[in-house]
Length: 330
Image (cartoon, rainbow, N blue to C red; front, side):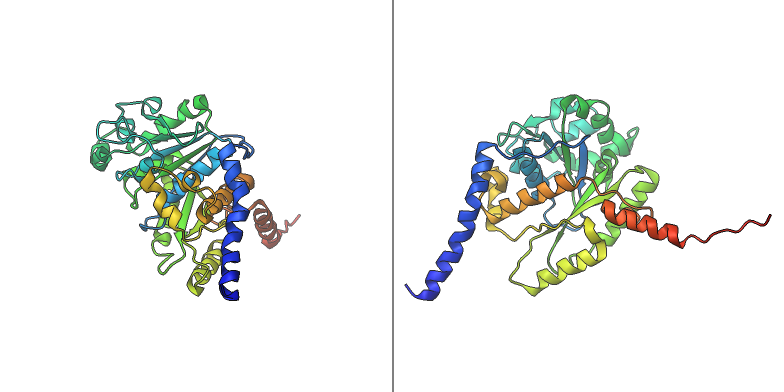
């Protein structure tokens, strides 16, 4: 074996060796994270398709569940890919998010436990959901059907720490229901050409929903996905996103990974399919970061975009310093 091949083999072995403790911790259930003071509900949204919304929803949820937190995933995409990845039943006739939205079932009736973890639950989507938007148009509180089903005691009774809502890539009544039911929006952005395509429109839609339907809605995190460290493009996109959105962007990025793509075909998340893979480790780290840094709330000067507490203090101090003193004549 040549010296070049030997070095390559040694490089290839290092990640697996480093990853094995993490894999063992996932298998043994020894990972832990502190519980949030109250349930954190997040909609994973981006009107651009193929950016990793469903992949991010299920893997962030699974990562938090493996850290001992109780997590619910609500599948609002008629394709039902999140349901598939979590290994739950979602054939036609299964009680699902469709029945929940139109009032034919309660959240406990529609909820299933994922075989992957005792802490991970899912309200699945069936193909029936494809016609829900038409049916919702004439219903009372059509924009709040999901919120009413979740926030009138269900989440508190079940003791969920995190809720992730997986949305279709459009702004219809399904996505609006998702955004009125939560406070936080997690936006996955792919590190490829046209990465920010549609994000401006999404920001406008979130702002509109904040003004008219849910004043608490805000962007608490942005996650860079499909990052390929071998290309300059990925680095350029990451820099552009961080320059535009600041520290609401998570430090951890999700690399391109074959294992991440393979896992749903086996009805699993990558966390369970191959916990030592680069993709699994990246989602474990991203979930840990999301949990430990907490909910980034927006400042009055940043619109719907969240900022760290430190940046919020700086913005408030700057705003205070710029206010002119008003002299009052005696």
